[in-house]
Amino acid sequence: MSPRPTPPEVDRVAASRAAIAARRARAAVKNAVASKERTASDVLAVGWADAASPEASLRVRELLTSVPTLGPTRVARVMAQLDIAESKRVGGLGVRQRAKLRSYLVQREGGVEQRRLVVLAGPTAVGKGTVSAYIRENYPDIHLSVSATTRSPRPGEIDGVHYYFVSDEEFDRMIEQNELLEWAIVHNSYRYGTPRPPIDAALAAGRRVMLEIDLQGARLVRQAMPEAVLVFLLPPTWEELVRRLIGRGTESAAEQTRRLETARVELAAQDEFDYKVVNSDVATAAQEVVELTTVPTAVG
Image 1 (cartoon, rainbow, N blue to C red):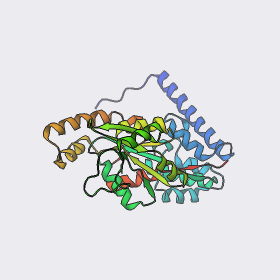
Image 2: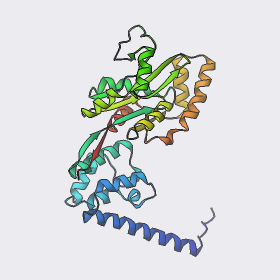
Image 3: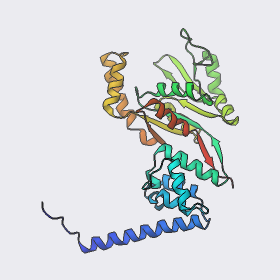
Image 4: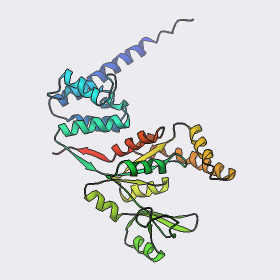
């Protein structure tokens, strides 16, 4: 086995200088938190917005020990409770870890939790409906948005539960009065849309709200309500998505091929979303989505 080539002296010097600069930048962040010039929750926000920032490369343990009144022993206990490993850096935390850490820190800083609208989207056959149904059954405090449609009810469907069944004239009125966050014609026949008044009312009442929708609808919701949080549901692997779609047995071979081609296009749009949740297990994915329906907000 041949020895590793020694990097040129100029490269080693540059790397050393970069490492020193990075350590100094992280030290400055910790000092700002320790002196109360910055809050730890602010450090999280910057680190999660910019993966190349000093905040993102800071170890969570170092951030917490910089907080006044949080000593090493207490920090170790808090990290164990939050299920965060000693080696984890701010930028390397998962969705659930971020939500828990952010909530803990902002509540310490005298903050409150603000309820918000979460929009769940993803490729065909990824399990959006299954995750949504699990949330409906297990998280009754979550308000799940109900779509309006111009088609007639199918057997067993209840108005106001499965859909709001409205006439074409009523749908036109909702469009004219800007009462729909988004709407579209589906299969060149009936119109479907997301009524905004029930969502606004639920948020005003302090409830958490979730909307399950397709990719195009999610984009339109973002235009109408920029403060909404967009969550992209991913399959564990492409092979698993194919297995789920074919395993349903509800489409012809030609339709399966068309849907898989659509899924490839939809997967390419995942970086447009604020968060990504992998649907390996329905209960776990549902919990991660639910945890994103609140955001701690500092008082100040």
